[in-house]
Amino acid sequence: MLFWRIWAILLGSSLMIGETIRSWGQDRHPLFVLDDFFIGIPLVVTALLLSQQTVARRCAFSAAWAATAGMLYGSFFGKLIDDTNAAAATTNIEIGFLTALIGAAFVSSLIGLVGSVTARYPHSA
Image (cartoon, rainbow, N blue to C red; front, side, top):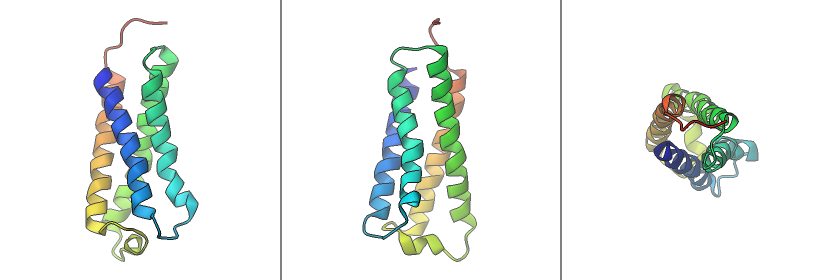
């Protein structure tokens, strides 16, 4: 289980740090900056809470992975099929590279979701 917890902390932190770098000085609406914090913070917090495993904490951990996958789905496919590259105007990162990073994070979140659901947990209340 430690592997999935570390993976969650790394992904959640990278989402928040990456969004900060991407948006720095771009005058983006705060809601479009904070959305990655809304998915990154639960990943990190639930991973840390799993140091003492309970059924509720395991469910919250899997839910954090699911929310991350859900939010990254729209972000990834939205950039993948956007012919106008409107997102390129509000980023410090080249749009093709940004799309690849978001795609990697999306795949990572799907793997983390499956891993968190199928992981063998020690018996606890």
